[in-house]
Length: 218
Ligand code: 5RP
Image 1 (cartoon, protein in one colour):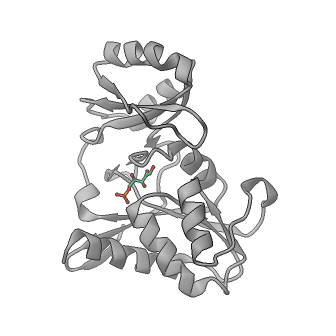
Image 2: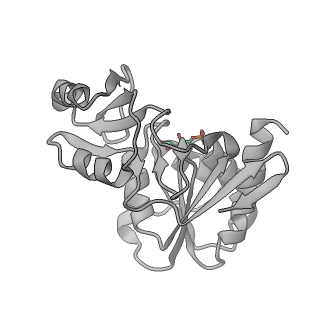
C-alpha cells in the first residue's frame, strides 16, 4: 500500500465519525483533502462544514459542500477531522506543516471531538523530529527567533509563506519535546506568538492510523 492509499483509507474511515445533521469541522493538508473528497458523498446528510483554511474552504466548495462561517455557528458541532505531522502515545500532536495551525486550533476548540487522521509514518516516541511550526506576528519574528535559540531550538523562517491571518511561520528544528503541554503553554505566553503547532493541552480524542494492514483506532 502506498502512503497515498493509506491516507485515502484513513480519510474514508473518518466518515464513520460524521454524524448526520451535524456540522463537520475540516482540517488542512493532503490527508484532510482526501477527507474532504470522501465527505462529498455525505454532503446532503450534514448541515455544513467549518474549514480551518481558505484552501480547505475552496476544496469543500468545489464539491458543493456547504461552508459555514465559524462565527455563525454554535450548535451541532460534533466532530473536527484533521491530519497531523506527528503524534505520540498520549495523542499529543505537532501540526502546522501546511501553515494552518492557528485556524486549526481555533476550529478544533469549537467541536466536541477531534478525530485525527494519519498514516503510521506520523507516530513518534518523542515529538520534535518534525520541526515545530510557530505562527508569529511579523514584527516579532527576530524576537521569537532569539528566544527559540535560547531554548535550544534552531528556528527557520518559512520565507515567502504568509498565513491566512497575514502572519509569518518559524519552523523550529532540533527540539526534543518531552513535556508537550508545558512547552505549548510556555510558547503561548511569548509576546508575538500567535499560535504554536503543539496540540497537547487539547490533543486528539481519537487517532485513526492507517497501516498497510488496515486502519487502527487509537
Ligand atoms: C496543516 C496541518 C496538517 O494537518 C499536517 O501538516 C499534516 O498534513 P498532511 O496530511 O499533508 O501530512 O497541520 O497545517
